[in-house]
Structures are given as C-alpha cells and as structure tokens.
Amino acid sequence: MKIMLISDNIDTSMGLRLAGIDGIVVHEKAEVLKALDTYTIDKEVAIILMTTKIVNLCPDIISNLKLTMQKPLLVEIPDRHGSIKIGETIDNYISEAIGVKLGGD
Image 1: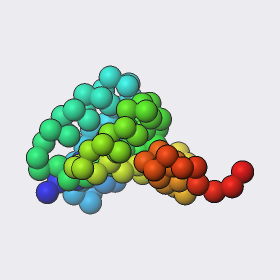
Image 2: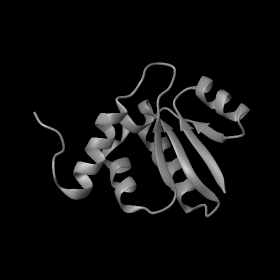
Image 3: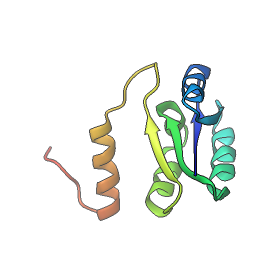
Image 4: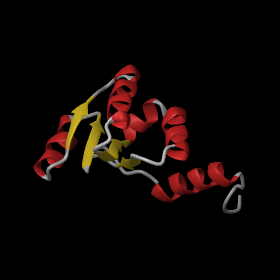
C-alpha cells in the first residue's frame, strides 16, 4: 500500500519524500482534481495526504469524497505556513456525517 501527497509547496513535498512518501505539488483547483482522480483510482494508494491550502481550494469536493469513499483515506495535514484547527475540522465532518451539530454556541 502507498501513501501519496498532494501539496501546495515544495518544502512539504521534499520533507515527506525523505520519509518515503511520493506526491505532487499543485497550485490550481483543476490540478488538485486531476491528482485526486489519479490517486483515487490507483488500487495501491491507501492514504492521500493533502496540505490545508490544497483542501481549501476545493473543500466541498474533498469533504464529499471523505464522506463517501471507503478508500483511500483523505487526510488534511498542516504545512509550514500555519496550523489547522483539527478539532473544528473533525467536528465539521462528524456533523455533516450524522446531521447533528456538535458543541454549543
């Protein structure tokens, strides 16, 4: 099984390549969608890592894929430009999946 990366910067790509994770650097929504199409049909790919900026280029599509696909697993990772609020992200996915808003406002 393989882990692939879709990144918006070379630094993240190079760092993960040192750990044995191959991937692609893209900057446009069309490039992200093409990479997702390529990786999701590859039976050897078990996990696709994506930087936060990549996820933000097409959040609805990626969210839908996360909720409907069993494999590969799509994982958002922070890059060197900042961190993500992982708790909020997880809450949003759970809320979308079960149709109930979590937490109190």
